[in-house]
Image (tube, rainbow over all chains, first blue to last red; front, side, top):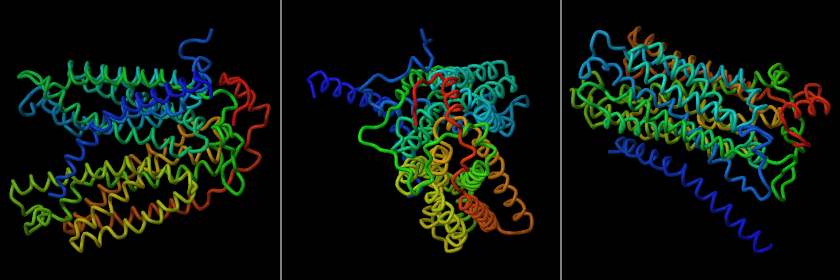
Length: 43
Length: 480
């Protein structure tokens, strides 16, 4: 694979990481808040 | 030159990474998933005029609750009516319209709160917002299936997981915003509606503009379709033909039974745990009605924890079961849902009688994974049976099963419980008959699933019909 091809491939995975982070952060926050409520069941 | 929203404009360039499409779908589904969290507004809105206590002119919680019911009905209706348009116009156009409806619906609802007009609230979040829910829900389905022909279940499972998780983000965010905007003269809902409407509009627009369609004939590298000995077709059924087949109505029954059973439990999870176990939840003796005020509060907190735990299993099941269906096959996955579900529903009353909270909680956690899994696996089942050309539109029509289940499930659970209490059954045992009836619904689903066979050869589109459909859908070249 050429240098340009490799760099384009790296760039696309970086973009994937950014996109998943953007949706993952609010989702993780929501899961954390829900877990905080859920643990009351086990106290 | 193709317009900004057109399908031609969003054909992916070479080397496009298909893993960019699921986050786009998630951005939309996480936003519209707030539909499940709307109840967070009902209590503050029930004293919007009286502020600290309900004034005579204030809305009742039961009146406000109709907003959610309307939203779910319009979700099903809009998905069924506009599904074919979504296929032709493309996911970006559908996503933008959904953003306008869902974000705009919050703004109309804010005007309803400002003017204290319940009809504006119904119009905003029920009707306009409901259309946004339907369009947003089906907008990524066929796109994801086309990008992930090798993992259809996993791809749609990721998006539909977002719909289950939307309220997890939206509800605490709404509480934070209402606390921020609350004043001596306002409960803060109006300002929260405006803020959330803008947030969801931007998030959904970002998702819609990130959608890309695979180029004609695209396939994942190294993947070859294999239909031998499976129910996966390589041919295409028109939406107008699909809904006339017995397979469509069998899958409609499969979804309706699975959702009816699960949605009935979701609605009653917290009070059910409290009534079945009463004081045992906090190590005290006696039924729920015999507890003191502080004890009841403590038990209610545990009930809320149970509901939260179920929501986590619901979204986890959406992703895990749908992914597993790629390996097990869709029909076997639903067989598992219905067989295991029937056993678990039938066991639940025994867990209650044994007084085993962990067993009771565990049973319902597994049941909720299968409730979510049923939602997330159905688009891939439809694509296997009817092909991918009209799968979004066919899925849209199938969602009327959800609207039906949204009424059937809660009505069954609530009315049977009231009937049992009315004939003198203690509150702790009032859910037993309901559980057996819900198990019966799953038996019906099992039979419907068993009757599903590959569709008849005569319902597939001819090459000429398919070419015409692809022309209407602005697709050139051939695609499976």
